[in-house]
Amino acid sequence: MEFTKRGAARMRTIAAGADKRILLWKKNLPHILAYGILGVATLPIILMYLWLLLSSFAKQMKYGFIPVHISLENWSFLWSNVQQAGTTYPSIWLAAWNSLLFSGSLTMLEVIIGVMAGYALSRLDFPGRKGLMKMTLLLHAFPSVALLIAVFYILNFLGLFDSIWGVVLVKTALQIPMTAWIIKGFFDDVQWDVEWAGMIDGCSRFKVWYSIVIPLIKPGIAAVSIFSFLSGWSEFLLLYSFILSDANVTLATYLQKLISDPNQINYGLLSAVSLFYMIPVLVLFIVSQKSLMQVSAGGGKRV
Image 1 (tube, rainbow, N blue to C red):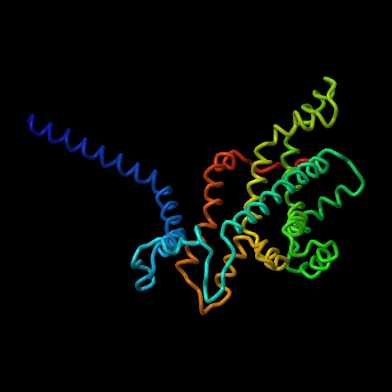
Image 2: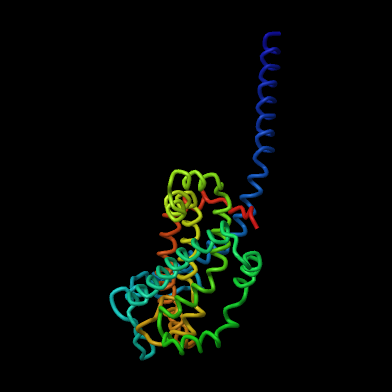
């Protein structure tokens, strides 16, 4: 009799454990499905970057994906200029400096102008304000490739053709509409009472804007700065169209030079330079991911 009771208790314990496992499985099933779908979708991208990494350290890829003869030969561009098919390419460090100069200048101009324009759109009531806001997204959506000829004549007239600063001005002008729109949303989320309190205490409008309002929208400014830098770092079309001399080459146009002759492409070298091109972006993402995660979409309450 006692044996029967123990067996029944054991069976109930086993059944309870099975029920818990079933409930836990049902609870985690949506997460398992979500991660499974994401894993399948990102697997080709992961394999692509893995191939890029392996190819950059291999002299040859057997069957297209098995590295053979691991060496640092493909990374020799870090300490010497690349020579390919009788052509000597400029230093990779010059290209990296020009890319950093272009991206940094673009970010500074875009943030400064965008913050001032966003505040004006959010707080000031001036003639044509609503029409300007309606045209903002349309201006940003206008394809830059359709403006190449017009931009060429303007830069040539101003003496800025084949100049990084000329392309910085063009890229800034194309990016400002969207930047101002995004920053406006963050200004809209700041209550008027905050500014009124500052002005009642004797602060000028500019001091209230600079000392009180700007610190409240730092997450928005950080996000816009990051996106502006990434946009400048990855820019190719404008730089390829309006930069001709090797002295102003950037990493994007440097990569184009390496693949300009399809019969002379060194894929190991191309992979190594591509990884070098990605390093600043990866570092920036690692440093700034906490700031990006804190950003919520701007409101746009006031039209």
